[in-house]
Every structure is written in C-alpha cells, then in structure tokens.
Image (cartoon, rainbow, N blue to C red; front, side, top):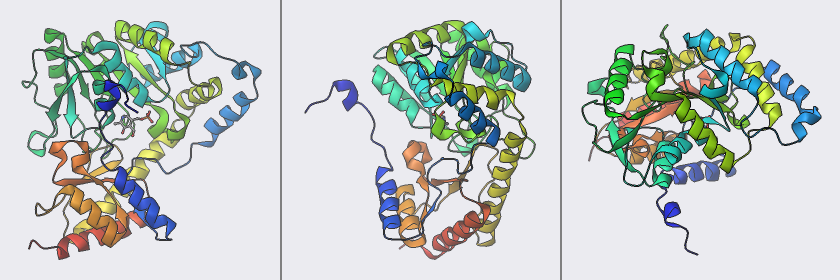
Length: 387
Ligand SMILES: Cc1ncc(COP(=O)(O)O)c(C=O)c1O
C-alpha cells in the first residue's frame, strides 16, 4: 500500500537497529548497559504521583475536558515562569498545554511552515524537529554546532526564505549551554528578518557547576519573536506521563492551539492536576536530580580519563558528548561498543552530519554502572588501533 507523500518524506529512525540489537541481547540474558536513549531512569516524586491518584477518582476527569486544557495548569505555568525566570506571562493567551513537548515541537512547523520555506535546526540536534519540518513540506537547513564555535550556530548563515529557527540549550546531544549574549544577537537577527524562534528548553533545570540555563522569553524581545517549549519529562522524571507546555508570542500560541483543537483533545485532566502539583510544589527534588546527573557526569568522565579517554565535561542536560578516534565512523563505534563491551551509546551521526566523530552517552544509569561502562569503552578505544 502506498502512503501519502508526506509520510514518505519522514526520516528513518537512524539507530532503530541498535535498539533492536539491545533487545535481542537482553532476551539472551546479556546484561547491556543502555546509555543510548535519553529516558530518565528515576521515579516521579511521590507528591506528584499522589496528586494523580487523587485526581484519578474525580469524575470530572472521566469526561472530556476543554480542548485547550486546564486554566489552572496555565496559571501554574505562568507562576513557574515568574519564579524561575522573572518572565511575566498572561496564562490565557501566552501559554499552551502540550501532550509532551515532542508534539508541540512538530506542531510549530505544521502551524507556520509552508512548502518550500527554509527551517533552521541544529546539527547535531534532537531528531524530531526534522519530523515536523518534513510533515509541513519545509526545507531543513542544518545549522552546524561545532566545538570550535562553542556549539553555537552561525548567525550569518541564514537563507532569505527562512521562516522558523529551532534552538535548544541546554543542548541535546552536546550538553552545552548558550550565553545570554548569544540569545540577544539571535533575537535581534530574528526580529529584523521576521523569523520565528522556537527554543526547546527541555533540559532547562539541568545545568552543572553552578550554571543556569537561559529562557529565551527572559531576554529583551524574546517574547516578541518566539516561543519556548518546556517538558515535565526531565525535571520531574515524568517522561511516560506525556505533559509539557509552550509559552511565548500570543499569535504563535493562538495558531498552535487552533491546530491542536483539530488534532486532539487535551491531555487527561488528572495528569494536568499532577503537573500543577509538580510546578507549584516543593522543588527540592529538581535540585537533587540536577546534582545526581552532575555526579554521574563526573563519575563517567573521571573513569574514562583514568583509562586515557579525555572527554570535555558537559555543562548541562543529561548527556556527555564523547569524541571518538577518526579511523571508524560513529556508527561503527556504537556497534563495536555494543558488540564488544555490551554498552549501548548513540552514534553522533544519528543527530546530523556534524555529529560524526562523537558518540552520545546518556546519564540514565546509576554511577556504578556508568563507572563500569566508561572503563569498558575506554579500554576498547585504546585497543582498537587503525589498520
Ligand atoms: C531536546 C529534547 N526536546 C524535547 C524532547 C521531548 O520531550 P517530551 O516529549 O517527553 O516532552 C526531548 C526528549 O528526549 C529532548 O531531548
């Protein structure tokens, strides 16, 4: 059966066969250390689970709820933005509830990109920006993130047909943050060229060594030019719950919500109640989580360095961007790591051509396992010499 052209434009999941290989090994009883996927391993804090349990028995949430979600959750988001970033938002017109931020990051392309429009997206970058761009018929313009430019995209490389630009700091996969001056220059350039900025702040709460992530909306002009996507998946270990939000320019929010009215009903009300508990409740668990990832990062890079593999420490997010020697591709390294060390990592090339030369390690296993994995990988790297 022939699918529609838009389906044929969808990119392939580049490391699907690695995920399959992990499953096959596990079925054979082999203990694979999975550092390949950014799937948080720790449980959701108890007060959030309790809020879901209470709301689950409320018949109000057994019925359809408003298409655009709970106004009380939008108010909680506005309060959260004020407390975290001193950003003032009107909850009714500047906030949209999302069934996870992944869907919103795709919907923004559907809402604003016409066939033939150019869309900038980081390379290497989170693959789902591309999914939305392709569904909308837009042309991806990869925006290189390289070590020599501190993993910031070049602002002079911008086609005249550009409609939308994605950025993401703390960054997946490189683990880098962007300084305020970068946001300010980007905002000025976007304002003068009428380009919409979409900032993916998925890892906004996870910044290391005393750093703080920056909200696009907190910079002068940010709210006039863009939208920001936040998820509860990472900060509150709620990846399976599917809840996030977008905030920013009211016209962007308006068209995003209009599109959503036609695509789906809002997330289950009980989950939205739990999200309110997460955003307005105690934030100690968020601080503790950030410390946990920082300690795991330190464990991995210290163990790797002891075996001669020197990896620059990441500044945030839940990843380490690890350089590998050039005599094999990043995909070959990922296969070797899995076959010979029983450790799964994500090949850098799966995130774009500028990811070649790296593998991404996710900090989603306890420190002991990360220590063990770093030793195994570094030894393999040392012993694998060019032919
Ligand atoms: C950079 C980035 N953005 C967005 C998401 C999507 O998060 P969710 O759909 O769970 O809200 C992820 C998930 O891994 C991510 O890494």
